[in-house]
Amino acid sequence: MAVNNPKISFNVDEPQTIRLLFDTPKLITNDYGESYMYKVEQNGAEKVLFATPTLNASLNMYGKNAEVIITKVLIDDKYNWTVESDSPKETPSQVEKKLRQTFVPDDEASLKSPDWDDINYGKCFYGFMLKAFEMKMPLDNDTVEKVRDWTNSSWKREVTIGQNNSELPF
Image (cartoon, rainbow, N blue to C red; front, side, top):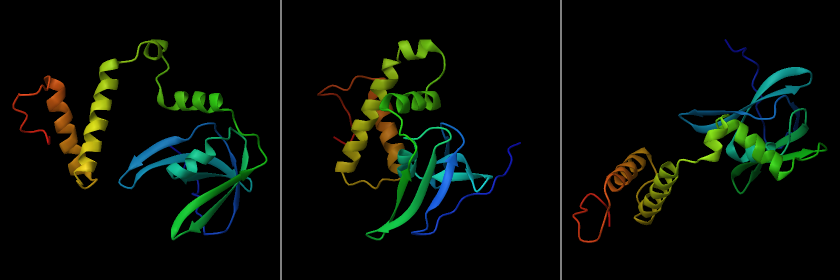
């Protein structure tokens, strides 16, 4: 079982200094969306930091043992983050390597031969999501499921001009 470390919480305009204990965070998905769990040290104690995708993008530039100062700020009625550090930022190739370690399987075969069908399916899904947005459909789970149905429908058969494509929106 995992040890429950105290969670870091932020107040607006109150900087907090932490040290990153690992190179990559753990991706967490729940009812609130995606967040990134970092194991950090603050004032000699191990803690956990749940980062938004925006904060994660800034933290991802630093590696293990980097000491950073994080401040939650309010700009135009929206919360944002500032991250400052004297630790060296990683190069783009180091960041890419970290991302690959987080999201890509270790076996070399998967890196050498991508699944082009999956890639093309994703592009098709993305195109249908853009179409749903143009149609001013709400961006919710129902729309995602509808777009998934459109994608599956068009993926199972070739959609050509003149066919009965009544389930598609165009």
